[in-house]
Length: 512
Image 1 (cartoon, rainbow, N blue to C red):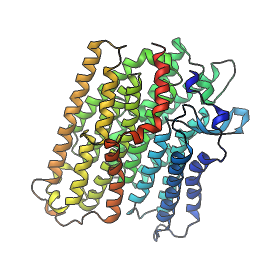
Image 2: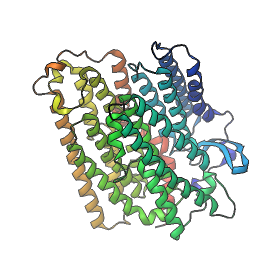
Image 3: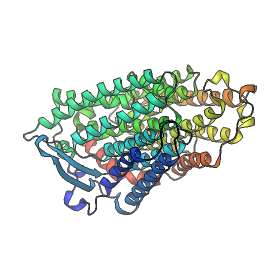
Image 4: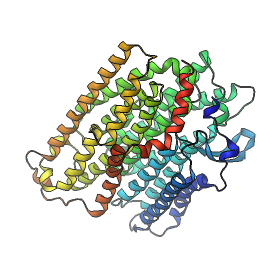
């Protein structure tokens, strides 16, 4: 257990880098109401200001994790700890380790590209970009918080911008989708709060510090209660079947930039929280329930793939694909060894890039065709060849083509399952066979969608759309190039988290 605890003296931050990363976008959001303009005459200033703040924030993130963060250390680094509201035990406590480092980088990149993709948002632009900036701060705080109450406040805060972004700028059924999203996630948050406070009260001293909570490791019925509360609460965000039904509706009604955030960042919060709370704080219960997570994971994989076949809307089909691909995260976490957990982390990074690319390119041709209905499309490859090339490339990455990041992550998860001797040979074989069914189904529903959308008879209503412009090409390349780089050189991502995931796996294996 000591291997995964932070050395505060050795890792104390000399400059509040993490606070700057978290608070910089929020500062930009506070400036938005002061900008000139009104609903009837919006300038480009809100968009440019948001992109500027997010670009600076992303450069800060890159600087911190390229030059300051030491990926060879196991514990929490760059610790910032200030008493905020001592009468309730709330601290402004930030820190980073291998579980959060790659996800904060991913979050910064996806949010910046989401703002850049919001080029054609013309209504209420000050509010729109203020919400994007607020969302950036909230999601950064989720990954960096080292105080449970601070984590929970950030978890709740990021729900509000997403709800408003869907409810105001979404499609025809936006209010239904936004309400469903907030109901699912708010009810799940109640379970998270109850489980976290129960854990905080379980020791001799009340504490909300995550590092101190990690030392408690409760077992028995109390540990099971906390574990299941966290599993359901975080499972809604992942999402785990049958808690996933908000996702297709949210993606179907959200605009493309918001879908990029949903798929690229928000789903990863669920996976990160499972590792941080269920695995790190409740390792003994996790070892006992690991097979349950694997079963839930393979259900996600197969059900998501089968459900994708039933979707005639491009975004809803990609959303169901996300349910399937996030199942590999559950399987990897359930493998309780270094390969499995590493595969889960790599799958979150890979899926974040690929899904964001697919939703962005979908939004690109939606702006040109005004439809997402697969039966109403056809022949787009002849008139949008570059768009077709980008969409096909992202689809190939999603179906785990060798040389792309999805292949490396999914293979690593499979290796994690096969190398775990705690499970019987029959269980491992059944898991791999059923999960492989999902792998077989994925290229079928993705490539059939490509065929129906981009080939066949041309539709007169979409006969003369314009091709992707340089700005859109830059955004697409910014998502697909890292996918290719990680696929060919996975160490660039693995180095950020390997030390922490290895220590986490070693602690689990000691309990078997």
